[in-house]
Image 1 (tube, rainbow, N blue to C red):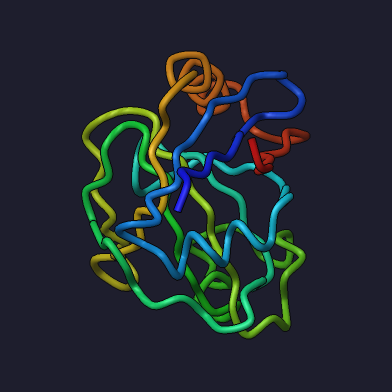
Image 2: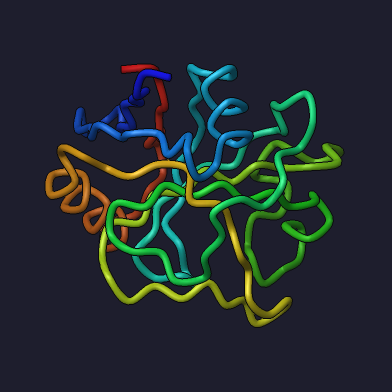
Length: 166
């Protein structure tokens, strides 16, 4: 199979990076994401995992992908897929409240980009949070990392994280 690429960007800041799908390591997850593209949603900056931006979306796969190519220590350029229940994300410690707009969905998908080192997927409520690494940034990480760091310092309100075929 030919390599597939996705462009991930921050719409308001007009910055994007190119991601190679890791179909050899996470075939079910890559197929689910690819088939659902384009995707977009409000961007959030992690408060537990450190150097991560992500969006929350209603589950989009016909069948929830299994955990593939798992890690709890993502590195710069890793794209990850997580699946949560709306009940779990509704706890006060997350701070979303009904803001995510996904209340009532059995599953919520978290598509995340890690842009710097020293990340640990550990949550005080649930412990370690393994996820699937489904892509790796091959171009544009430095610019997206600068924009993501700006979101950390200035806030993410009004910004959208986009995913589309490249």
